[in-house]
Amino acid sequence: MHKLTHFRLCPLSRSVRVMLAELGLQIQSVEEQPWDFSETFLRLNPAGELPVLEIDAGPALCGTYSISEYVAEELKRHPVDGLGVPLFPGNREARAEVRRLVDWFHNKLHREVTRELLYEMVYARLQPGMSGLSPDADILRAIRANLRYHLSYIGYLAHGRRWLAGEDMSFADLAAAAHLSTIDDFDEIPWETYPKAKDWYARIKSRPSFRPLLADRIPGTPPPRHYADLDF
Image 1: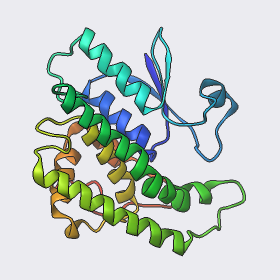
Image 2 (image 1 turned 120 degrees about the horizontal axis):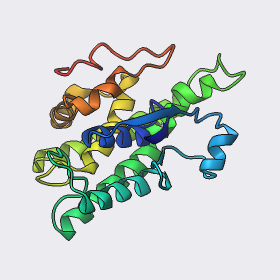
Image 3 (image 1 turned 60 degrees about the horizontal axis):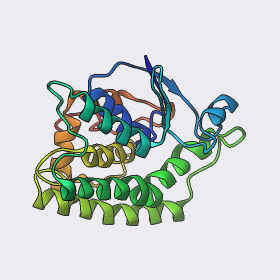
Image 4 (image 1 turned 30 degrees about the vertical axis):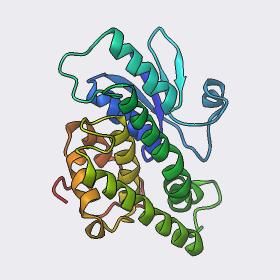
């Protein structure tokens, strides 16, 4: 059985979890603490980054880029009947747009919003000896300003296209939704201000593959009441 090493609120990990669920793959899940990686994990991935997918009788794939590309290549060789989400659909130009948006969400959005929010709200608090640490108000203000920009962009994409990268749902949608699910866990998204983004996210949120993410919990940080409500 394939094994995925992840952290439940890590958006990079979440995008891979949803992807694998869309494919109907059964995997063994192992959690790592991003604020205190084990020596075993660092031997597996010296870069110290999540997620890592260990293919049964195959390689250890480190990071969403290598995982998604490897899986996409496997699907070309061995198509899955009834697959709901082609990861990189369309012609060469369409696939390039999917990859551009995946890079946007997993790098730019992660760097400017999700990674910093997780550090302030979870990682710093759970580090040994840091349990009483409060989030930095100035950093949170900067994160919220950055988030508004990204929500506007998602709304712009959702308004002009059926899905974020084009007519077909793709890994770009899974990547973006993974980040928003993490951010929404902290009730940081003013959904009513961004109705196009909200409508698009509701479509992703209602997919069966997304439900395990909505059930994740971190002690001491309960999500808002709408978090797991498929109709908001």
